[in-house]
Image (cartoon, rainbow, N blue to C red; front, side):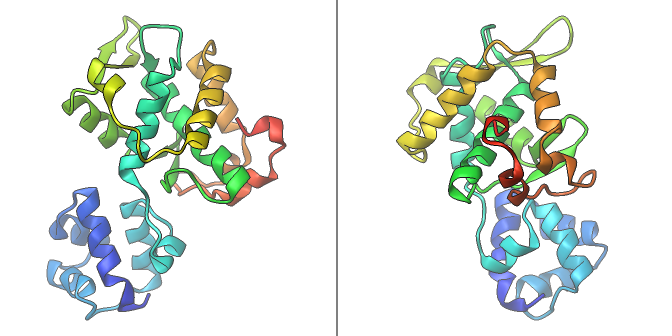
Length: 228
């Protein structure tokens, strides 16, 4: 991989909160070797590039094009769901919330050929989810924008605080808020397992390998009624 993407790699690392040492250990190279990559003095081989893209939560194509995710917008999408009353209970189950945001990103891609947030989703056991989802939830909690309660069954319920209700959703357009509301309304009375099963049966999840970044392009193969 060309060294012209050194600055992008550095910016992605800083956004994800990784140190140079952490990345070098994950790549299996020395810290000086990784520093040389960020300085544009050493090229990544294909294996290293693929591994680094996975660590940073992007695809090789994104690293090459310079297109990165809008993390703040992703957090606002979470808040938009919570403010729309995405569940009839006192909060939205954490797993269900992750799937709702996924549906917004992929349904937006279905119509516009680009995702709403630019986040990359990974295929894990409980469905497609960005690596930064859990960090986003932690940050929203630390910012006082959400409350987290645990049910007797062990589920984590996420609910908006008064601060969240007043938060600016300036990263989202009116059309984007509208699709979030439509998805929220469709799944409001559904159990978490239902939305998990739904996303598991979509092409993006089915066609990806375990722990692999999921392709947005495959959602375009779905029938319109099966997008969300």
